[in-house]
View 1 (cartoon, one colour):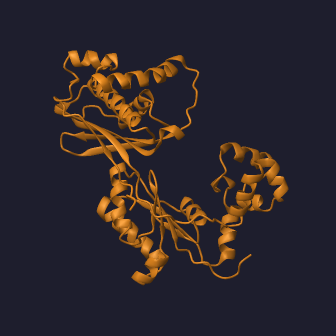
View 2 (cartoon, one colour):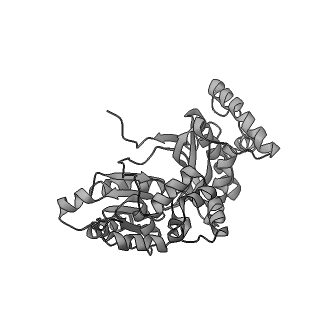
View 3 (cartoon, helix red, strand yellow):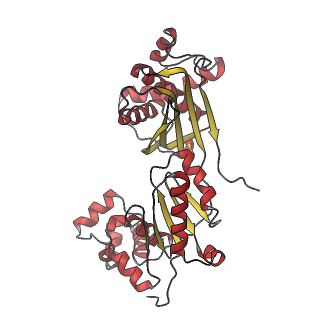
Amino acid sequence: MPTTPTASTVLSLRVHRAGFETYHSLFAVLTGITPVVQALPPDRTLLQLSGATSYFRLPPAALADRLQTQLAGRYGLVSTGGLGPNRLLAAIAADTAAPGTVHTLPDDPRQQLAFLHRQDVRLLPGIGPALEKKLTRYGISTIGELADLPPTTLQRIAGATTAGLLLERAHGTDRRTVTPSGPPATIASTTRFERDVLDPDHLRQTLLHLATDLGARLRAAEQTTRAVELQVTYADRSTTTRSRTLPEATSHSPALRDVLYTLHARLGLQRARVRAITARAGDLGEQETAAVQLTFDRPTESARTLQPVIDRANARFGTGTLTPAVLAAGARRQAVDAGRSRYGSHSTFVDHRPRRA
């Protein structure tokens, strides 16, 4: 075990209830402290503060406090952080911190290891629900108990490759570095109304329209999303934003529709006068690398089969050539404008990733 102090200069920061747009704009504040900032969407970032401590002549805890103050003052956001000597310990320190605080680990590696070994085994990266249940059956509930296992025993439980990585991390070693990366791209679709809307059926049709458009744009870009955000703008120009991380990446319009319906229902809007609705897809990934879970539900699988056909038809003959029947009926009743001109509907793709030289 090493005996020389290891400085806690890696900050793991979680920003609570930050929408996609806010999350992107946070980096102007974060990079004002250190250029070594790594995005971990939808609400976390990693910062390496070793260079910033020399530049500002402040300890890491003071820099973390400055960041929290700036985020609260500029955006009104609460953030929670952890300071450790590497990504692993910083993340676990953040997971065990009280909301709005920063948990700073001591520089003594023995105290750092003692802290790590007291924590629940589920906090160790690489341990999912299934492996946690297996470890529990063997009486392993803390990281310290896992660290004491003989390698051959853990290999029988978790497999050779996973066991080696888990034992390394259980002893406080993390070879990952903080890699500078900006927030990822997002795809957004917005509907703005000519007049304020109160009718819940009209709003529900609009959500369906946004999900249909968002799914089509994701598939056209050969992207999938793991995070969906709904933003509602009211007559007084105030907004409410809700988001959800999906269990699996998708570009399936019905899946996006269900998420938007759920987020909208949780807003509990009664007589709110709605001026605009925006749906955003974030945490994008390449479609060809996404795993699709078979549902054995005939309507769902049929809809997935039809989507490429619908996309090709709309691409060839114009958007809205093939559309859900409820939207077509709504257009005839002039509840939803199929041509988009009445409500000013538009979609955007915003890429915040750094460009290669």
